Image 1: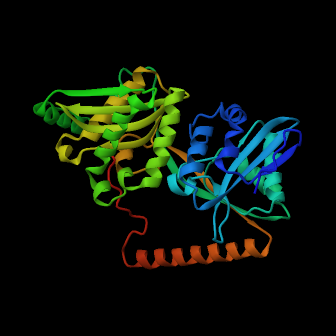
Image 2: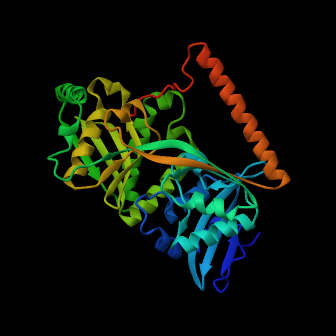
Image 3: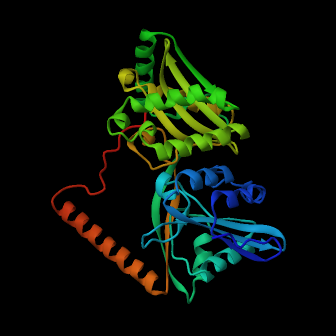
Length: 379
């Protein structure tokens, strides 16, 4: 279906392919220019649409103020299923996402248009400070029901501008592990770290291949969850990294012991923050704690550059809690339209919630911890 988009009209909805999304690139950049996070940028959304949404119908909801774009919501619904609309790609990468709008009035109009189109929604990770869920509650009044619940937070490490190198704030046990790792690494050869910001594919490619290789050496390789074995996620991150190269915000760090690369990360340095997208290390060198050593170097790098924070993204894990207890809070939003389809989704999701809670109750009564996961350290 061709998008019904006209700059002369106040409203437009586009059921869009990636080619239609690209036509809004300039306006999208203006709407997201004040975002702290690179997630939600045009480049992120375009890569998600192309590589993570092959089995989905895309819905690009656009609001206009006169001839100017004032708001955008990029959504997707899995094809052939009784499924709500979600942010494009969020089911794959699981990072917090939002709607993008010029002001409160534009957001209200955007939410109203979504409601008028009778769209049930599931936004699994919305920043808790976002006004989107209140706008949806107003827009769906009389049209549907909106549920807002706490969602998984994202860890981050705020940096102190007056700190010498950032390491003085670490726990004594972590400092001890770092010293031990440094001694063991130095016994194997010279230890070097390099932070690179490639600007083209030729400079990026060898760094990218090193990252893939390192990620495949450990448990992710054994479980075949590494990017090397996941073509969809590999294509997405590669496409986004290439665009980040062009914007000058991509960073790939590599830690070497002697002539061996033993740890690497893929990150975005943007809006005075460092966003860690991927971290990998060679488990054959685990006695040297290469992940810890690279993270310590990253902390020193970010502190010296006077960045505001390091954003770990994803979910808190035992290894991230060694570095920080700070978390950015999120909420999940479910919207069910007053329609036969919407009520079917509500009944299905309600039953699923009851069954999940029943299993948790049974597990806890047997002495198990239902929330315990095999969270392996990233460093």
